[in-house]
Structure formats: structure tokens, C-alpha cells
Length: 278
Image (cartoon, rainbow, N blue to C red; front, top):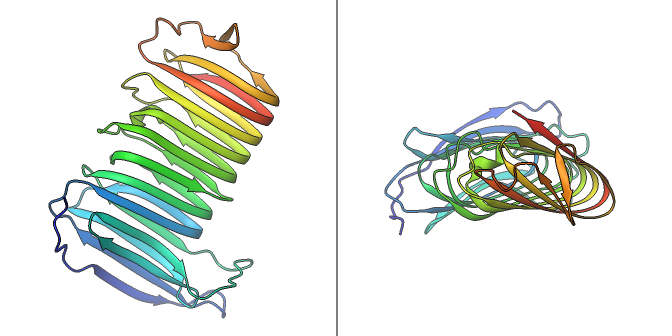
């Protein structure tokens, strides 16, 4: 269990003049020092604006930089037991974001500490790099966004299932092999989806993809064994480098490959393309 008595949250605030008269901008930096702990359950929520996530190795559990309209939003940094809740919440109701200047959230999370991570964000431009984090579980969901998620370094801990959910978005996942997950689930609505299967695979894995309307591009490194099971209605498949065996498509070296990924694909409308990379 995690020790109580985390110390005071460091808070630095400076009022920033808003570009629009109806907005009152504030910039805040919040952080917490690292103490003895076993595992942290981290829930992060952010509605609209620019959103970035990185790892940090400076004796901190987290550091969060926010820029927000203080008349409409307020920061959240709550720790209770082994749960950490970070983000921004709205004040009042009926907020119309159309024509408003976008806010920003920059988040850094501690390396080396087991983290059960839940990220929820909406109409944002997201740049997320989970490399360096010790993830035991991952659940990421986004709405109408332009998002890039990278796992630039291998996860030192294994996890059962990593889940990604994207609405009407341009969504890119890179280095999925570095997640060290037994199963990866991607549920996408409408948009353009790119999945990079590069990285350091530690074992065989399953990749389940459910996509509605849009395009899907699978970037597959040479040497990784791939088996594709396709259940689709009117989705076209460009299966270059795969051979059809019964009801499935396989890479030529699937049986002999050191690591193999079985892809279960359920697609309604759109295009599916397999691209081989070095």
C-alpha cells in the first residue's frame, strides 16, 4: 500500500491576459514529490485544447502545467489512498467552446513506479508519449481529436489488456510492441487510424480492432509474424505481403517468426492497408 503524508502540492500561478475579452487566462504548475509507494492508479481527464503526456525522472510523482480560462474551468489534482485524479473540470454549465481560444495541459508522470493509467480527453490535439512509464494497465479514450500516441521505450512491466477508444478522429499509435501487453484493443468510430506494430515484442499477442467508417493502416515491421482475421462488410483490404490460408491472411514467415501477432479485424466501411516497414 502507498504511504500517506505526501507533502504539500507545489503551486505556482500567474495570471495571463486573455486574447479574447470574455476569457480570463491563468497558468498553473502543480507537482507532487515522490515517496515510498507500490502502485498508483492515475485518472486523467481533459476536455478541449492541447494535451501532452511525458515521463519524468526528477523525484516527482507528477508535474502538471495548465493554461485555462479560470471563469469556465478549474484544475483538479486530488490524491486519495492509491488514486491520483488530474485534469480540468468545468464550472457551471452550457459552455460553448466555439470560437474560444484553446487551453493547454502538459503532464509528466513518474518513471519506474507501477501505474494503472486511465486517460480520457475530448476535442484536443494530443501528443502522448508513454515511453519510460511502468504500466500495469492502460485505458485511453478520446473523442473528436487529432491524436498521436507513442510508446517510445519498452514498458518494463507486463499487462493483460491495453485499451484504446477513438471517436471521430485522426488517431495514430506508434511502437505498440513496446507496451508489453498480451492483448491490445482498438475501438474506432469515424476517421483515419494508423497502427504501428513496431517495438520490442516480448511474447505473442492479440490485437483486436473494431472500426466503423474510415481508413486503417497497419505498419508491420519485417520479421514480425502476422495473422489477420477479417470480418468486414464493405471494407476493402490491401493485403500485400500476406497470403490467404482458408479464412485468414498470414505473413510468409508466420509459423517461424520469433514473435507473432494475431489481428482480429471487424470493419464496416472504408479501406484497410498493410504496409511493411524496416
